[in-house]
Length: 468
Image (cartoon, rainbow, N blue to C red; front, side, top):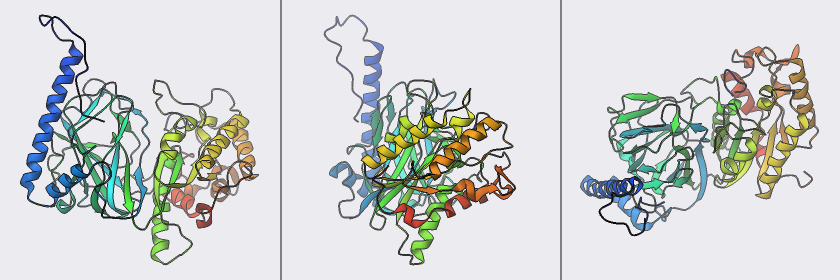
């Protein structure tokens, strides 16, 4: 959702070009590939030299990771891989078509929902037009809130297939090797990456509600934060942080639009409803509540997202829920439950009156796909929006018809009736004032808190219904 339109691997190598007359110039793409190969090779050599000179845990553990191969750096540990944080790639960042982030270090700040003993990340070049060359990536626990500074004892270099540099083709993603690190739950983590050349448009998530940082030059190993003079309200390239956990045994994915993405929540405060749900789970487990499952909670909300229709472009910007479900839900580790809050944009952004049956059929398709992977599907009703600029009586009628069918039990395994709990008792077409951010569509911090309180632990456990 948006304010204006609704809720709202390998190392680079030169390709063979056949036998050519040496007097002719080489094609530009061959020269570019050769240059990139040199850059990656030099970066690897510098990386190993720097690590050898560290004389401490950073160099030793990074080298151990590269020797043992993908995801095996945490071999001494036991546990289950779960999602601790995620963000769905939305599209290409405006004004990055030519330069991308060439010559700069991006330091993404993300907040964990669950802790672990090892970590790995996913980088995406989904919307790039060329290969994304990344020559250095680090991960560290932040030294404090709202700061680019890192806790020096936690800084780790990441590798991909044992190598410090990687070239990610346009339209693809890459998962790093695992690195040993005690990652706390409910804390900020810094993921820094340096790109020496442009891959074209930057793949990003635009509604971060979190400040990240940018530095000119290569500063991935900096712990002071001093070079990071630029700020960003986006998450760039980074789409997941997974942890190997000895306590958590699964992941719950929050799948929705800007109400899940946290539009209008306080920036930097982690008050989106999935954040509050993670806090509730942690508090209940700390208090000895045996009914509370120990799950990581990841947010797969996209502002403006619809069930049926995606945005323009190939690949589509803001892809539909149907198109992105495999990537953003089924592609996460050890998913036990998906909580779906999607459909209001299908109503608000339709040029004509939306077909409630088509929206419901789309939601049922998501549930069937979840069940095929052993995932339980929890669904919400659609919140009211009278007072919002997109409100009409016809759209309200569609919302009510969709909610009535959801309440009948024919769509989801179990229901979280946010509409009934949060509408104005004197006008059910409106949000209750204390839950309204002011735009009459998106909840306030208190509204997001209320949404998370409505989820019962029993809804997050057990199997899905066979009769759906």
